[in-house]
Image 1 (cartoon, one colour):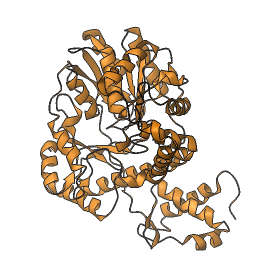
Image 2 (cartoon, one colour; image 1 turned 45 degrees about the vertical axis):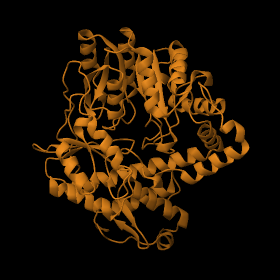
Image 3 (cartoon, helix red, strand yellow; image 1 turned 90 degrees about the horizontal axis):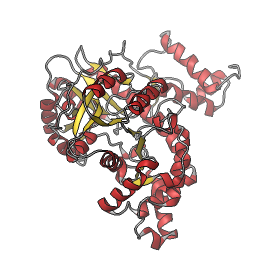
Image 4 (cartoon, one colour; image 1 turned 135 degrees about the horizontal axis):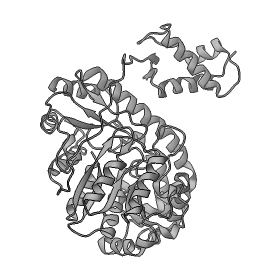
Length: 472
């Protein structure tokens, strides 16, 4: 019997992984059933199940419906990652965002294989628990659920969020939070609070296209800063940009950035905050993916590392509960709190009281934390599965990011591929991708695209990737 040291299922999983590496089990081989494995190694059935789950998480095996566990066909080598970006070094208005609406419309078409919009398939979300909590809240607080919850929002929800933010190192009073209609509105309120039309905003490059749309709608100019797919925004390049241009705000996604997937280290986060503080520039921190790391340790928020700095923290439950909830929040700091509350009120009065009550109920129940633990595992598997498929299907010279959280990958294609053209042709054949130019204010990254991995994986997805590779 295996020695009872550490996690027994991990020991068992590692032993099986060693056998796979030595060729005892080869790609395509069926592994012993859990009951057979438990008898062979004198462990419980639950330990054997956990070992197979561990092997699945790290990419050695895959489950086949009604058939069992099989050794995965793994790529012989990992594709290289893209290099640091080199965007235009001057502020510019945002252009080329008209393609995004087509992408989002495609996300609602069941006939289209959804690889473009970063919207998780319902199978990844706690739909049943959320439905029960919303229903229970409506029965319990019938009149209140149908009334306005004026800014700053439902007190019970703000208390639950304040408790959860301690995991990111943020210790704050619930009164410092304002509930918003998703993270997109939080970012909009933050930028409206600290800028005026014509101001320059420093951003990562590539960056989330939703941020570019906000910048465009507010009459701001974007200053793209070189960004490394493994380490994040270049603090040195940002310093040079600040010395040259009148930057009024900086927006970053430090934890599992969309679309690159990097997680900035604490040292780099502190250096970023110190640089901005030195020049009196507020930092707008988008932490919508912060809870979705593949490791067991939740990364710190910049606001948690430097609580006295001028940081407007934005997040939502769109990627972890349901995108259609539109329940997010902003912690703008005392300096901007009153302004943000007012802007929220004059923009749309309030966020749905019924949904705020339902979310608060789910958070209080403890089921959300259990769901998050499983979701991190599921997203990790999804990213590994998509990366392996891209490695198998796409042409030599392709580069792919290796995110440590979230559920998107950034693919850099060889040669003179134009992903704008590719996206249009792919959509005609029932496949949605996000072309690289929509992630840049100046439509850079024509040979790049973002793929969402949190889709329902079936033969349609494999065929969609094969279709893309044939078009390439």
